[in-house]
Length: 153
Image 1 (cartoon, helix red, strand yellow):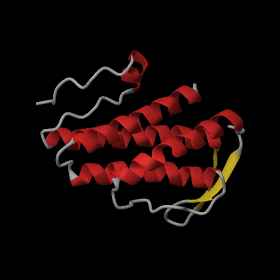
Image 2 (tube, helix red, strand yellow; image 1 turned 180 degrees about the vertical axis):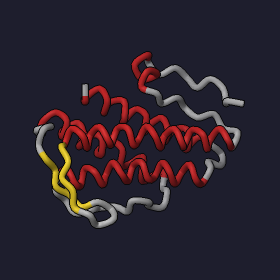
Image 3 (spheres, one colour; image 1 turned 30 degrees about the vertical axis):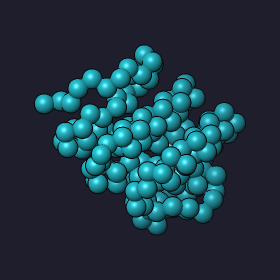
Image 4 (tube, one colour; image 1 turned 90 degrees about the vertical axis):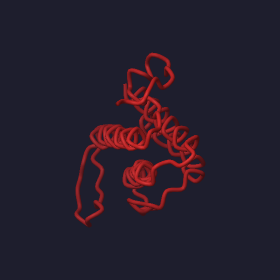
């Protein structure tokens, strides 16, 4: 099931990226939230793989850099999901400098839910700007990704 969830996560990241790239003037806050989603995914992989932090939690939004990052990022997640011990404990230091230990499966669950939460915020910001965001719900992914319908009034 985690494979499917992370397939959805990649698909959803790609949909948000596409929506932001096609907008004439994507909302700055939406771009910042989406850059944070991708940065958080990178940070959690760094922690899972015991690597030094390689990005800021809130980087400057750069859609072209994000587009280049997504394929490798999600290939790394797929590798973790398929080959790692999901029960193992991951020791890491959070962004505030506090040490923690959390099971890999709980971290992966957090990554997926964190992304869904913030992609929802991006969609709201796009709607508030008169744009039509791409649907990124898991059920839309399962159903074969229908096109966006209309902005909410």
